[in-house]
Each structure stands twice: as C-alpha cells, then as structure tokens.
Length: 472
Image (cartoon, rainbow, N blue to C red):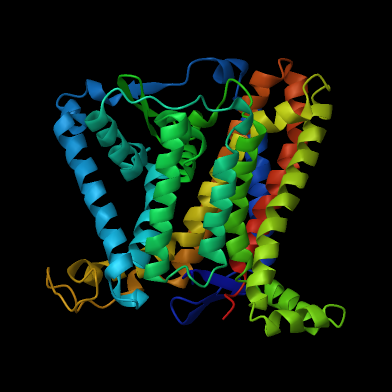
C-alpha cells in the first residue's frame, strides 16, 4: 500500500503525494536534534512540576452525561441504529469483495478497509474515544445470535497462559497482509480473508466467551482499545468521562508479557512501514540481490516463482519487532537496576510499555495523515458504485481527488509536531508511572534515565525515517 507522505532527503522534502519538493528552512539535522532536545526539556519540566500526589491521586475528569440532553446520544435508539449501519456496511464490504469488480480502484472494499476503516478508526480511537467498541460488527452479530439462541454458554474458560498471544499472532498476519502481501488490494482475496477471520472470531467467542475473546483474541478490539486509552473521552461504568489525554494509559498492575509484545508490535509495524520507504531499505535489497553467498537461494526462489521482495519483507517484518523487543527489555532491565533492583525486569516492562502508546499514535497520525486526506477521497465516487457495476447512486462517480487539500510542507511540520508531542506525552506518562512503581522519589528519577535515553533516541530516529524520500 503506497502511503502518500511527504519525506525528506538531506535538507529537502520529496512530497510523493504532491509531486513537489519542499526545501526546509533549516538543515534536517537541526530539526532532528531540536526534537530530541524538546523531549529532553519536557522531562526536566515534568520532573520539576509533577508531584507525588499528581501520580497517586484520582485523575481529573468530568462526566459528560451530566450535560442536559447528552444521554440521548447513548440512548438505545442511537446505539442500535449505529450497530445496524455497522453490520450493513460489513455485509456490503464482504459482498463487494466476493462479487464486485476485481479492479481495486472500482471496488469499495480496498479503499474502505485500508483508508476509511483501518486508518480512520485509529484516528477516532486515539483522538476521541473507543467508538469501535460500540459498532464492532463481529460483536454485534454474536450478541444478536445469543439473543436468538438463548441460554448460550461458552464451552470453556479462557486459559490464563494464553494471554493475548492470539492477538499478537493474528496482528502479525494482518500486518503482513498490509505491508508485504501483493493481495492487499485484491477485493476477492480481501473478501475471503474477512470471511475466514469472521469464522475465527466467532469460533473463539463460542469456545471461550465473547468478552474473553474480544479482550485477548480479536485484534481490532485490542488495537483500538489500546489507542482509545489515550483519548480524552472514556466510558467508565455509567459515566462518560472527559479526561486529560493519555491519562487512561496508567495501569495499577503490569500488563502480561503477551500484551507487551502486542504494543511493541503495533509500534514497530508502522515504523517498519516507514523504513520500507527509505533509500536505506533499497540499499539492503541491493546488497541481498547482489550477494554471491545467497545466489543459489535467489535462483531457487526464482525457479519456484517465489518473490524475493516478499521473502525479504517477511523476514524483516518478523526480525524488526524482535529487535525492538530486545532493546526495550534491555532498557527495562536498566530501569529496574537504576530504580534499586527491587522490581523485576518483566514487571518493569509491563508497567512502562503503555507509555509507548502516545509514540505509536503520533507516528501513526504522521505517517497516515495525507493518505487519509488524499486517498480517502476515493471513497466519494465509490459510494455511488461500490461494486463497480457502473452505478451512480449518489451522482458522485465523476468526483476527482483533490491533492491540494494538504501539501508537503504541512505534512512535514505536522509530523514534527506530532512526533515531538507524542514523545512528550510518553515522558509524562512514564514519569507518573515511575512515581507509582518506585515509592522513593530518587529511585523513580533514576529509573527514568534509561527510558529518557530511549525516547530521545526514538524521537530522532522517527523523524529521520519520516524525512527519507519515498521509494518508488
């Protein structure tokens, strides 16, 4: 999937989506070092102004349902209408994939799936709240099924040892489909895969119970749920709270290792997507293709008609998260040691992994913003002809994509602001968590030194990746 993001080479931005170049007013190195310095400065400010009570007291919030007339928005009429629309769209997309036009540009499924839903729902989850929990069609259909059947019970309890490993494995497969597979935009393949995933999801709900599988095995509930913990709106029991952004990422207990792996996987996959756009990746592929040591393997792949690019990307997609996991565990070990050694490395990474979520959100927004705004416009003509049968239901088939809606300069400065802001939020959440975990203030401060080094480094690396020209 080609992402329409403006990138920079040396001190110049190559705006792939805009066919223009944007010359930076300052050298790229100044932007990168300045961003790192901003994150470092934010740590100094947080340390001096955030007190013990700020970390341990109940966070500020306001129940939006206290506003007169607000309960109408969560009334059964509104919620059930949204759920019916969600299921109808779900069915339409499957039908379009299975029976519609094979050309991805004429079929609504690829554009809706990758742009409107995958990118758009992530934006909504992070910036507003967990809307997916209300309209998840797999959940809605299963609830309807249980009401019809009556007295339904799951076959067995969900095993504690299994954790979120089903989500980790399924999300890796999903990331492979998005970033590696040449079937990512094939409507028929996507339609079949949605049917298969639906079967897996409903089977998991049937065996282990709906809530248990949604929490551990339904990757989009897990993904959007994590992103929504950053959002300013949260549903808590009978309340609809307006709260400070990112405050929902604080945990009372360390998350299990499987959840750590899921968070790191969602962070590294979007970074991996950016790396695929860099000249560095092209250089790696060139060295692989020209290497005499693997010449026989390359020839074998050609004989059996296996795409070398797919093999290289698949290998990198598996290796890259493992490397990042190793790095995070190493820094977690350092944090535990700096904090006095009373807390295990496994607990430390379980406590602090959620502080990386603002970084994942920032990179996600920076990486996909122009993709959503430009490629997302293709949904307008597709709504009139979702199957590619020549219809014009809403008289929008003739709509032309307006690429001037966002330019390379806007993309670059938005990326800089988002990435720095994401890391600042991460520093803030990590410090609050450190105060909770390490009861002594000095130990909490010492424990944050490795985390600060990691975040400053990742800020600079993220901007460098975003700055590279898109590989054509």
